[in-house]
Image (cartoon, rainbow, N blue to C red; front, side):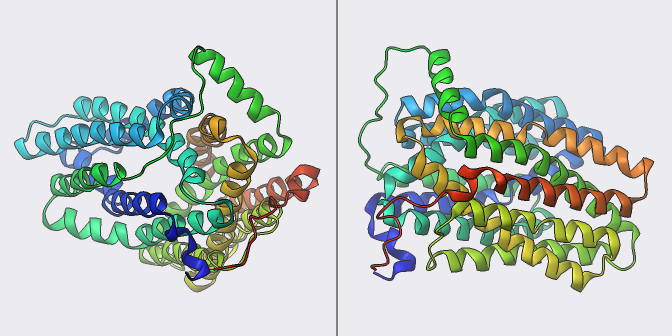
Length: 410
């Protein structure tokens, strides 16, 4: 089989890939559907922030426990169970919208349940991938999943926008629930050995074991600490200040911002195709250099936000981000024991995400206190420095790949 698609020769990976592709495609419209559902009920940005915050806070609260459960129980079963919960909550949202009985408090409650469900799915999703394929095909498996994710990131919002505008957000939620419904029996075709957890320990003991695995690897906590800062800058500078400049700067404009965001997605997509064929020999070294590239569009956004220039910068940054994404997953999956992998991923996710709400609020305040260009240029410099300083940690710089993982046979 062609090397780029070599992971597809593994039966378990084929079924998992199909189920994941279905849920990524149908789920790509969820954020747009939920946003317009909330605004239909109450056209107030604060109401939307309450619903979105409910999901995020619930996700963060349950994330570590999700990692423990994913190391204790069959991961495919956890994903299926959470999909059932998601079908019920998404279906309830759609039913409330169809009947005109939806309220903001009800959507907040359902978002809390969705956020908790996601906290169990994400560590299980990451932990299951090394079980589905051989070590030499692990890079291709991660790149194939990234390819679908980036493709739906580009096309999903467009399809969702059309569906929401023509049929309404409730129908978009129905489509999402149907995707989950199809994915459940497909995942049942994934046959894996039982988890290696010996049992007889408490959840808090398992959390401590996961913490020791996390903290015992300098490359791991170094990168997570860096991402605390980098993600806060990313969501603030790109997610808050970017749209603000697009709305108030004629060089960019709202339509131009759409092209810039799409260019970033195209960069991710093309890099996933390259990573299907070219082995990533130094996953963290190249990955952190790739992440440093995001300082370029942040800085350009502040200095001269012309559409073409900014789109080129965003394209480069998207490609660099995908090098890190694949490299990081390889580093985790090849160096953390499989029976502890989901717990370690949950610590990674918690550390990387926990400061993001603060970044959103901080940058919203900063642009009222200082010139946006100054804020963005300073942010770009800090972002690049934080990303590149991790390379001075020997375990980050030197990390390679295990013997046999770089096989070039098809």
